[in-house]
Length: 322
Image (cartoon, rainbow, N blue to C red; front, side, top):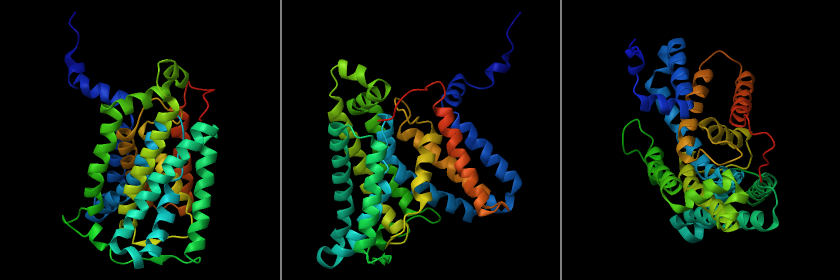
């Protein structure tokens, strides 16, 4: 008896891709669902432009930290770098002019390197370390800014429109995404970072300098966060916020985990974060257009994070995030 050819309707490569990256199925399902529920508003050009803007914000915030998560650690300093970097630009603008924007990049690299050294040498859990640094940067930002948001003019050229309906920040994000994916998938650095996340002791026995590559992971995270924050500084209005918003901290983590990078490390990475950011953005825009109360929307986002973490951690109980 011949096997039915029905199974051949879908190419094996697509089946493997969907099996390995179920977030694609979720993305398609969410898009179709909201297209049916709210066709006029969800499928509008304005909504697509908003989705693209929010996708860029999530991606640039999450790209660097997703490298660290691969090693089994966490980096929550990205919001602090963006906030403190913004107020430093405001302070340096009278002296350095347009070059003051580079202060954000230097702050990102220095912060990532400092976190990596402390975490690798003092063995302080990365969650506590980076959260403490985030709160410190937040306090410094409010202190230096005098408690008021500070607007900096002169960097409008960074996000000046180039292509109609496409945010220029999205065009800037493309080479950043390619660079992060290339490092993690096609270089020795990425291979070693995945090995550390999969089995740190085994990587050490294999001759990998674990401390060195952990420091490098945090430094790369700071580098990508610094570059991304330079773009986001103008993309989000060219102002220095002094109030830490929980959404700004949590949403990039949702994008990382939802994309398929487990918090215990060893798999996933920037290429998965892109899918997670897009899926979350489409989901959020869909529920935002619904009649749900804002508090209910926040509840759904929290539940989405819990479900994503639970799914990614299935069968991996007892693993400690360092």
